[in-house]
Image 1 (cartoon, rainbow, N blue to C red):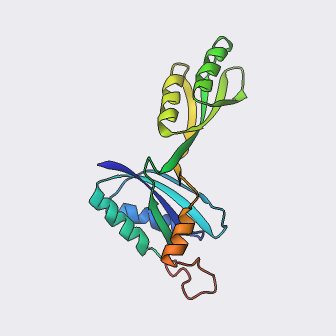
Image 2 (image 1 turned 90 degrees about the vertical axis):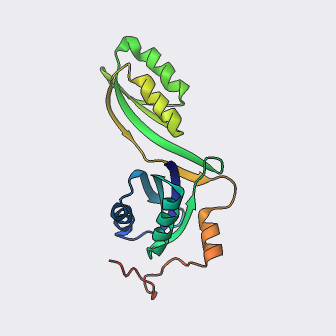
Image 3 (image 1 turned 135 degrees about the vertical axis):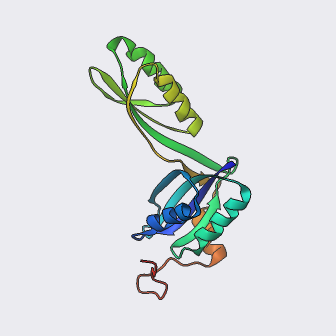
Length: 186
């Protein structure tokens, strides 16, 4: 099985995330990572979904996603054609005598110490998944107290956007609340 990253543009309306997640659940596919957020257009949200699938199953997933009325466009984000990042906030135990060593580790991975207390440090980092994993591994020696990690997000390289390609090639219009293509799946 191979890891695939899909970027999916969807209408920004209630229930869309549940329908997309339900599609994967019904098919028995596990989502490794799912990040959803607004785009430059307030009527559109962007989902970045990371899955472990073989090629045939990926084609089926994409076909099934396109059947959902709220899906506007889908693109697979390859390692060579996209920029992929994750965000991390991690709280570690840190004695005053270890602060310099922690700061050096954090700097190595372009992280920032965003909060300090007598017994802990909170670190923020953004980067490729491999860098985030390596930072966490390096911080284990100090004792990780708590962490939160975002799902993977990705954008294609270059000037063309997924919205440009989707709206220009498919002719799909963003739904208007007064249009005949209103969300009939709710």
